[in-house]
Amino acid sequence: MTTHKLSWPVLVCLSFLLTFPFLGTLKAQGGELTLKAQLIWGTDDAKPKDKDLKDLDGKIKEKLCRVFKWKNYFQVGEKKVELPRKETKRVRMSPKCEIELRFVDDATVEIKLFGEGKHTGTLRKSLKAIEQGELCVVAGDDKDRYGDAWFVIISLAKAEASQH
Image (tube, rainbow, N blue to C red):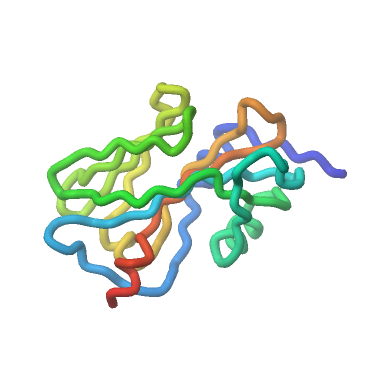
């Protein structure tokens, strides 16, 4: 087995550059945007039997496999987030991971990532890109398991994407 180590800075740079176009467009209804947030674990190991994880399949897994080295990607959690124009929403993805979402202005959404209560990074994405189906991806090394990684992926919620 070949071991690849991607450092935190490399993963962060790759994740900020990584966007995935998907089908569908959306106009934020009534000044509110409905997003889907997914917490994903990347590993070469098989799915643990004692964990409640969902196999990641489809387009997102295909895109991750093209850029990153892991054989398996499991969804740890998923949340639907209603993001009003003038509010900040903080969402707990796991006991160790939270995200904070807000509109910076009429054209930009900001995602802040918190790991174990500490701010670890901020990503801004244009509302137009999100409405066109691009994903926002933030990634980092798994501190508990050497060689593994986690990803937080923000996209349009399916219900909204299917309205158009």
